[in-house]
Amino acid sequence: MTYGFSPVENRCRGPLAVNLASGQTLSARNGSEVSCEGLGFAFGSKFIFKDINLKAFKDELIAIIGPTGTGKSTLLRTLAHLIPPTTGRVFLEGKEVTKPSPAIALIHQSIATFPWMTALDNVRLALICKGLAKNEATETSEKMLELVGLKGEEADYPKEMSGGMRQRIAIARALAASPAVLLMDEPFVHLDEMTADGLRKEIYSLVFHPETTLKAAVLVSHNLHEVIQLADRVYVMKGSPATITDEVKIDLPRPRTERDPRFLDYLDQFFNELSVKPLKV
Image (cartoon, rainbow, N blue to C red; front, side, top):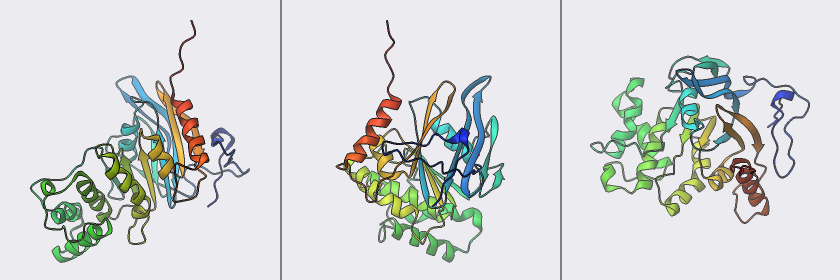
């Protein structure tokens, strides 16, 4: 995969001195699956973030990190047009997004399952708007449940499942709608660490599995270990209003391990970038 950035966007760096600017010029829309240009969101006259430019290319998982309150979750919702942006535009495969689309799916922080529905019905819910025949919707839903490791659990209710299993249902439901882009807002934050670690190890291969329609994914997380483990590139948001202050390519082979000294280099870099510097007296 080849990346190129204009001089203004040449902020992509990392501890291994990987520079994505190779003298080529690439607009946010050229070759990207999802991108935004000059995106901003304000409550009244107060901007939470502004001038956001980012892109995710085919088979790429990008992450967005930043301090609490910089509007990362809101940014995901504006990318999906669940919340209209105040300024700027969003593009999906080069075409402007002006309203919510099933081609962009969002997995929330909270584990969103409906307790009165079985696992199968929870997933099948995503297919109602497609007008599929019931047997076709069932077949698709069963395939997605199998993909996330829940084959045989189709008739179980969420209350009979662990948190990790319920989050797998949410992932299966998102994938069942055949999206091109998956947005993930702290998808493992409410899981115990062992369960979350297991899902992290699986999620990359799940979202880019040959049986899914996904072409790119965007992750928001405060867990820097998680970000380095999963992301191909990382955008750093800081300030008030928040802007993109850095862009880093994670140049590590998969599967990734925290025992790799380079993993720790990235971790140190992000901690340093996000740490609040004490005021000099």
